[in-house]
Length: 113
Length: 113
Image 1 (cartoon, chains in turn brown, red):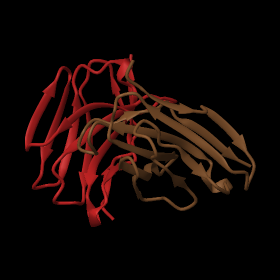
Image 2 (cartoon, one colour):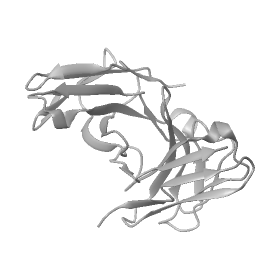
Image 3 (cartoon, chains in turn yellow, red):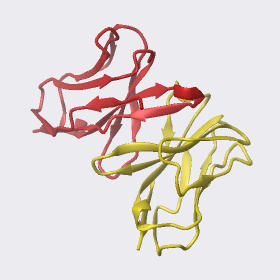
C-alpha cells in the first residue's frame, strides 16, 4: 500500500531533550516536506526536500533540523525542544514537487513540557 | 509573504444543500490551486485541484477559479454529513527560489442531517 509513515503518533517529552520524528514513504517520491499545525494558525511548512541531500527552509524552520540521506526517509529533528514546539506535525510527500498531490502521514502529536 | 485567506467559519449547511467555500490569494503569479479536506484528528487529503480559469467538476465537487480576482472556490453539491470536515485551500509559492505550499487556515464545514 502506498503510504507515508510517521512515528511516533504521540510523543510527550521535556524541554531540552533531543528527539527525532521519523518519516518514510514507499512511493519513490522526490519531494518531501514537514508541516506543523496549530489552532488558529493552520498548516505551516517547516522544511522541505526536493531530492536526496537537497533540503530548504520553509516558513518556520527555527528550532528544527532535517536530513535526506535516502530518498524514502526524511526525519525531523528537534535538538532542544521547547514548549512552543508543542504542535501536531505532518510529514508529506509528492512525486515531483509542490504542484502535485501531497500524500500526508498520519501525524505526530508532540507535547513539550 | 504570500498569503492565502479563507473564511474560518464555521459554515453550517443542511443536508442536501450546496456548500460554498472561498479562498483568496495574494500572489498574482500563482498558477495552480489545491483543495484539501481534513477530518477531525486526521491528516489532509487532496480532493480537487485546478489550474485554469473557470470551473472544474468532479462528482459533487466543483472548483472555480478566477485569476483576475485572485479567487478560488469549492462548491459541494448535495452536501452529506460525511462532508463535515475542515477544507484547506493551498497555493504553491516559489518566492525567492524556494518551493513552498502555502495553506489557508481552513474553513470548518458542518452538514446537518
